[in-house]
Length: 487
Image (cartoon, rainbow, N blue to C red):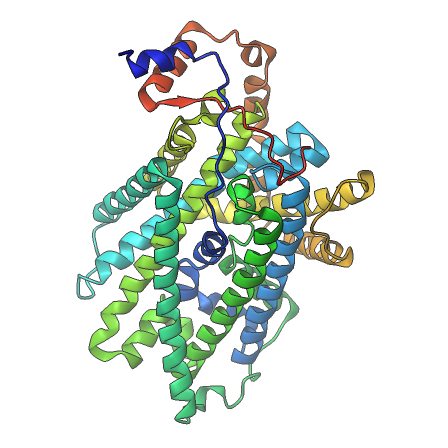
C-alpha cells in the first residue's frame, strides 16, 4: 500500500479538482447572521447608545434605525454576493470593481488587525463572563483570562478545521442559546411593563439632545449590529445562494432588530437611567434586579453568546484569507483545503495565530478604535463597487437587484460615518489610514513575479511541501458552479 503522505507529496505542484460541496443551509445562514451579530454588545454596552441619545425614547429609535440601516446594507451585499460569484465579501467586490491594490488593502486591514483584534476582544469577553459566573463577584486574574481566551480560540479553530458541519452545529446551538437568553430578558421586561412598572418611561424623550450626540449614538448602535455582511464571505459554500442569501437576510436581520429593540425596552423598564450610565454591564444590573439567586445565569449566557460570536468570525475570516490566496494576494498555501474535510486549514491556523498574538497586546481596544474608520471605509468601498458595476456592467445577470436609491442612500450614510470620526478624532483617523496603507509594501512583496511565477526560495518550497504533507491539504481547482455566474 502506498503511503498517503507520499501521494500528497507527489501532487504538490498540481491543482486537484475538488467539488466544494455546499454544506451551509438556510438555517446555518441565519445562524451565521444572527450568531455573529449578537455577541457581547447587547448584554454589556447599550449604555453607549443611551448616553449619547440622551433619553430612552431617542435611544430606542436609534436601535430601530440602526437595524433598518444594517438591513439595507445587507440587502445591497446580497446583490453583490450573487453578481460577484466569489467568497471573500468586501475584498472580492472591491477587487472586481476597483482592482487589486484597493482590494489588497481591504484584505490586509481585515486580516491583520480588524478580524483578529475583534476575535481577541470577544474571546476575552467570553473568558471574563465565564469565570465571573463561578467566582462570586471576584475579579479573575488577567493571566487566567488570557489563557481561557487562547483555549477558546484553539478549540474553535480545531472544530472549524475538522468539519464545516461541526462548525455550523456549534454556530446553530450557541445562536439558539443566546437568543433564548435574550427572550428571557424580553419576557421579564414585558411582564414588568404589564405590572405597571413604567416609572422610568413616563417621560421617554426628556433629556439633552444634540446632533453630534445623536451621531455618536448611531455609531454605538451600528457597532452592535456588526457582522450583518458576514454571510457574504462564504457564499461559495451556501446552498442555493440565489434563494438562501436574501432569505437569510430577510429572516435574520428583522429578528436581530426586533430582539435588540425589545431587550433595550426591557432594560429601560427595570433599570433607571442613572444606573444604566453607571453600569459596566447593563444585563448584569438587570439580572441582579429581576433574577435574584439566578442572576449568575446572565454571565453564563453572555459567555455562550460570545463563544458563538467568535466561532462565526473565525469561520468567515478563514474564507477571507482563502479568497485572497486564490487571487495571488497571499501565499498560495493559505488557499489550500483539506483533501477530505474540505476545510481551509492553513488559513484557519494563520488566523488563530494572529488572534493569539493579539491577546498578548495590552492595547488591543485602542487598535479597534483606530480601525473603526477602516471598517466603514471598506463597507463604503463595497457599496461603491455595487454602483460602479451597475454603471459599467449593466448587462451582468442580477438575480437579486435592489432599488438604486438604497445603495445610494447607504453610501451617503457611510460617508457620514467616515467624516464624523475624522472631525471628532483626527488622530485616530490618521492612525487608521496609516495602518491601512502599511499593507502596500507587503502587496508589492507578495505579488512580485518571482513569487507568483513559482521561483520561490528553496526553504519556502520545502515549507509548503512539508505543510501539505502534514496537514493533508492541496490547492483547489473548483468545478464550474452552475448556481452562480462565472465572472
